[in-house]
Image (cartoon, rainbow, N blue to C red; front, top):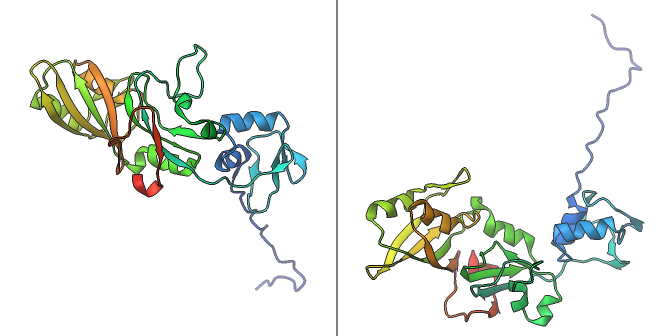
Length: 253
C-alpha cells in the first residue's frame, strides 16, 4: 500500500469571504437619505466617501457595521423611522414632481416633512382618492407592497350599472385584466345599488397598475369613483382629504 509522504502538505480550502450586507445605493436608501435612484446620482457625483475614499459605484457592496460612510463629508447614520397615513384627494399625482406642473401628493405634506426624505408606499392614480402611506422605512414599504406578504388593500368603487352575481364571482376568482396580467382572488360585495349605479367593496392583495379599474373594465364597466379605504388593518376612517397623521407599523400589519 502506498502511503503519502510524511512531509506532504495538507490542502487547505480558502476561507469563504464574508458577503457584505448591501449595495451602497441601498445603504443610503435604508438610512433615509434618498431613494436608490437619487442615491445613485449622489454617489456618481463623488459626494459619497467610504472609509475616507470616494466611491462612485452605487452597486459597491458595503458592510454598514464596519464601514464609515459619509455624504458631503458628514457621517451617515440610520434616520429615525417615520410613518404617516395620508388621505389623498382626487386630482393629485402620487409622484415627487411632474414636468407638466400638475399637483402631487408631496404638496400636501407640511414643510417640515417636505425637508425629509419620505416616499409613498405604493401608488394611487390621479383620479383615485383615499388611504396612502408615507415612510422612510424601505423594509416596511417592501412588506406592504410585496404580493407575497398578502397585505390586503380595500377599495370602494362606484360603477356605471348593475352587476350580476356571476360577475361578482368572476371578480372573486380572479380574471384576465389585459397586458398579459391576471388579478388574484379577491373579496367583492355590493354595498349599494340604486338601479343606475353600484357601489362595490373590493379587497385585493396585489398592486398592479390601475388594477381595480382594469378589473371592472374587463367586465365591461367604467369606474366612476374609486377610494382606497383600508391597507392591512389600517382604516381611512374619518381622516379628512388632504390631511395626514402619524401611525405605527403595527397599525397596518
